[in-house]
Every structure is written in C-alpha cells, then in structure tokens.
Image (tube, rainbow, N blue to C red):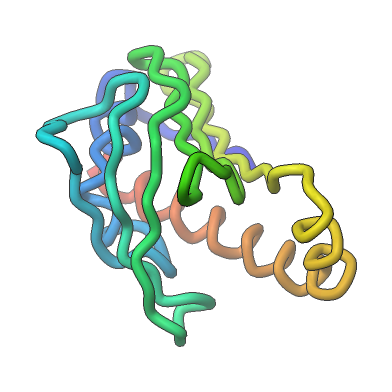
Length: 146
C-alpha cells in the first residue's frame, strides 16, 4: 500500500520510526513502548505494542524487534515471541518530486501454522490489513502535510 505525501523523507521518517506515536496512526495498535533501554529505532531494538485486534478486540501486547533501519528509507519490525517471527511490518520511503512516496507492507512468516491460518482467514485478514495500512498512511499524511 503506497501513499504520496507532500513532505520530505526526514519528516515522514520521524513519524514511521517513532513507535511511541503509533497510537496516533494505527487503527489496531493503540500504544507502544521501547524495551530494554532502547529510546529509538536501531537494528535489533525491541519494543512492545498494545493491540486491539481488528480495532475491537481481543486486546493484547506483542513484542517486536526492529529488523530494518535505514534512516529516511526503510523501517521494519518483526512481531513474535521466543525467537519465532509471526509476521513483519515495514515502511519504505522513496523521494518523489517535492515529497515522498511511502509504502507500508506486511509479510506473514512462512510456516505451517501461518499457512493454515491464511488459508482459513486470509481473505478477511488481508482486507483488514489493507484497510489498516491505508488508514495508517492517511493519518501520517495528515500530520506531515499539516
């Protein structure tokens, strides 16, 4: 999912890489905090996100690890526990004219349980993810263009 934003990459980067602000943008994750003394994005930094699945529930915490962190370009994190990735979310920023094209993406880890889940609920969850990414990007756009 990509959205063009009339803002330079550094302004967009400041929002997508600051997980403590995710509650302003995401329809599912309403808060997040850095863990283990981390104060900002860096490869291997961990944070936890407080999620309200599908915007309704159940409500739970997820542990995330930053997997990509190229300033003003790529920010991604895996979600999982005990060294097992469930899925990965990320943002790619590409300078575009006077602004930035921002792509948010999602990737489900390839394992038997996830393949079964996606076979059963994939179509509905895929739509939910697309709608959530669109909402997140539009909310970020409103802030960086204000």
